[in-house]
Image (cartoon, rainbow, N blue to C red; front, side, top):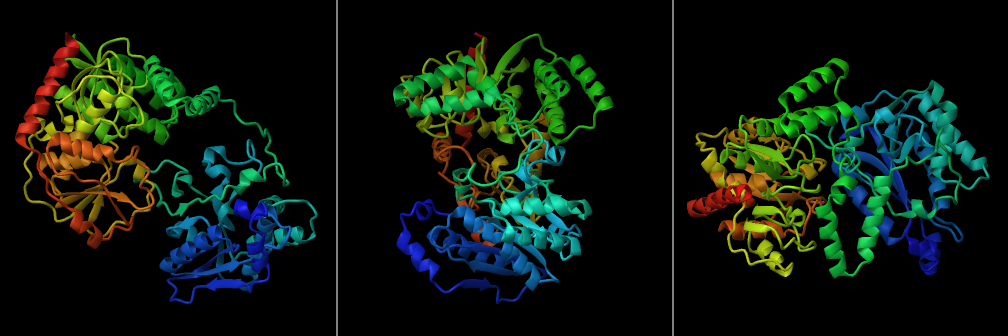
Amino acid sequence: MSTLDFEGKDILAALEEQFAAPVSLKNTKRLKIQNAIVCSFFTGDDYYRNHAARLQKNLEELGIAYDLRQISKRQGEDWADICRKKVGFIAEVCEQNPDKKVFWVDVDCELFSIPDFILNSTADIVGFQRGFSTPSKIGYESKGRFWEPCFWGINTTAQARKMVRAAAEFESAATVRATDDFFFEEAWRAVSPNMTFQIIPSNCAVDKGAGTLESHEVFFRFGSSGQVDNFKNKVEQHKGNTAKKKINPKRDLLELAKLIEEKLPEGISTKARLLVDASGVTGFLTGKKHNNLSSQAVQDLVAAGKAGDITKHNEALAIFKRKVLPNRYETAAIRVASSFLAYAAKPSKEKISLSWWENPYPGNYGDWLTPFIFNHYTESKLIFQGLTTRAPKKHIVSLGSVGRFIKSNSVVVGTGVSSFKHAINPKADFVSVRGPHTAELIVQSGGPLVENYGDPAVVLSRILPLTRGETNGRIALVRHHTHLQAPVKLPKNFDELSVQVSHPNDIVEFIETLLQYDCVVTSAMHVLITCQSYGIPCALVVFKGFEEYVHGDGIKYIDYALGADVKVISPTPIDPKLKWSEIEPLVETVTIPELKISEVEMAIKEGLRRVNS
């Protein structure tokens, strides 16, 4: 509930609400879903009333029955008291709808759909596991409660309804100070030995899992008013078997570093950030958080790939496959190890250190264009140099908005930035940058004026000269990897391609596939650049509700266009349901000038010359 309400700063509104006539919103439109009803309630303050209107619109679009009820907050009641009323309310909805499955959703959450595997589940109870965790962490080992209370479903079965009645009867008689979550957990523990249950994968909730194109559809977005933290230790809680938070010194140090940075004056903060990044501390603190790898064998496999050690890589892979069935993260790491090996194990005695962003595994197309492009211009082995780790040798930094990670011994070729938030190391050897905005930031950081512009990805059509023949009459969607959990609905004439590729063979196949389509719709900048290099019609978009998911303030799109001598195109927000009427006006065919491609090609060759000098 709103903090203002519960701190007593809006007493008049609370009194008006207390004596207002009750409001119950029902779906009076034609129903598409006959076997279920969604329920929720809300108080009359603006925060919850506005979210109730949004949820009502969601549910009417889905064509499902609902009971959204405005309840009164009486004088002296707080957030915990209001939450407790949920128990009796859900029991009432269940009694009124004995033949319908009942789904509860917190009113400030969003339902984009209800997938068939949930809607037609035969389990007594269906919901997200506590903390939106995975099946490997099921139960009470470190959690005090089993279910996430923000969205769950109650079947029409006798056992499911028995649990709800038990919770309601206990709540009406209990004198403990507690929220709905406590009473439902008590009922679950009492009745669950005779119940069936189904856990919804965390990937189905926005920001609660790692989205992939193979996942179940994303249908839910969690909302939070912030009241849970305010009432911790003030209401009755359950404890897990260990009830101990795992000690994570790296995480604690990272949080402390962020806090200190926020408190420092801007000038000192900027210098401290440059020093920390260059020293490798950033890489140490954030090293494993992107890829969820706990297996030492897989880590050794990736290390062998980076080192170009074919024998060690093959031995480690063979041993691992004989002992373990890899999970999705390990499978991704195996793929990325092969990608590192393709560049680091070339039959040459010469080595070049090259930096790019390796995460998330199995790799992001735009980032892995760095070794793909430079590999074309050199016979030397390309040895990976992490952007966030110490760099003892001279190395090249190129594609991507990675300007903040440039070091004093970096040779910079076409690098950009996503905002002006972080300074750029002025001591690097700058051959070229993405565009004039990056050049301006270098000057502001005390560096030289760089006047050679261009993202290296513009040379793709020259190093991989493919002809675009007759197309397939379809449209390709390619999402930025941070948009994989947007609730996209593909029209019949759309195909989705994954941007998560890293091996040179996969990159070639990806580009060849793009060329087969009538046009491309993308939220990934380097897919746009690829299309412009080959003259493929393309629309640059971002999905409404996900505008902030790609890092930066949008300057990189302008910087790229000005540096490549092409029309400036920034992402246009569109409905994730992909309406062609909304997309068609955004499709443009832009071609990069051959002169600019030649300039960028010369910069790449010059960068290779300087890193070897």
